[in-house]
Image 1: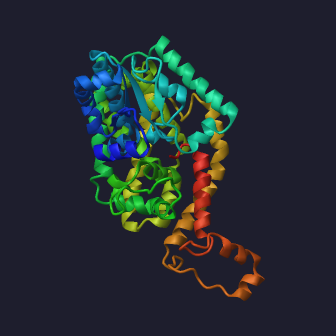
Image 2: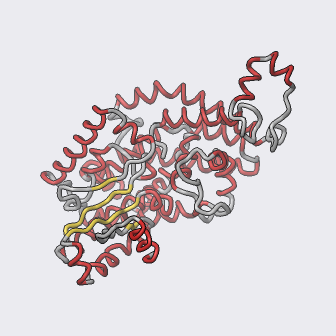
Image 3: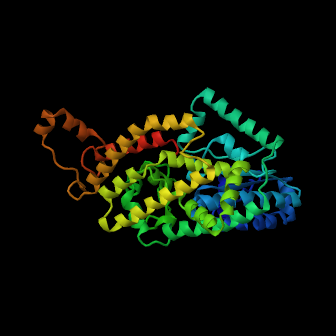
Length: 430
């Protein structure tokens, strides 16, 4: 790595030393982050080089894919607290670099709430964030949007400094640590240890087609032959968003809350208190509630019926039962009778979009079925006579659609259009 960096600096004529920004993302890395940074700061020549300023990046994407959203969010919170303590010990001003994506599963959410839910003393008037995918256009696509976005960042950063959010009570921390372990175990037991999961995931979602069509900014996998662990975070989230099931966002929450309440009913009251008084916990719950409002297990069931082999139907049914149980527990903790009870504006917007998205979901499911059906999937495009093309304008248009596609005329184009339409309707995709 050092030799490659030296070569790049020489070729680009960079004379000043480049700054070092450590990245911590997976659960084990986040736990080890304070010790790693302390070791870095203990090097005297390095401290002299940075002149009392250091930037550390924390990643939301792979941490969520590694351990589930609940455990990742809590570990990211604790890592920031500990990193700030280490920096203070060495007299260094630490700037946190938040590597967020657009979707909730990758740390996305309303800017103002995201900043105000950070631990006290972790911003100090400055922070850095990534803005990715469709969020770039939403936040910076036009001049007035750009200024409004920057105003939100500025206002939230100032507010965090002038009115820091409350720190969690010791008993809240103990409960979060305990149920975080349960959430991680549940998530990993399904995603990484359940032998049927990979097959189910690839059949029940358009993940394979997404990877083959090369419509993302990067290859969908780090290793073409790998499983879930090699899949990049964007297609992992994107595939579940397309089917309206959003599994990476909510999986683990239900098991954690169920365990806590079953162990002691007083934990339910504590979780409800945490929701009311602790911004971090409230924002975490509210974002998952928003995802449930956008979800539809009935749509996921349609994909199962059309695309998944019968021997896996029971597995999909169990996951959907888990979905409903988690949603019920979430509402109980938030004290809501219905999803988005306190956000009628968003609820109405989602209701208006729902019929359009549902139509696209049905079109996508049947298009995927045709693509995967051996009768329709072809390595070479079918021969269509010149006479037939000339006599049928619609047939001619189909032939002109993406002539390099390996699928029958029009199928790949239809699939891409449904993907884009569903993503636009969901608005939190990558």
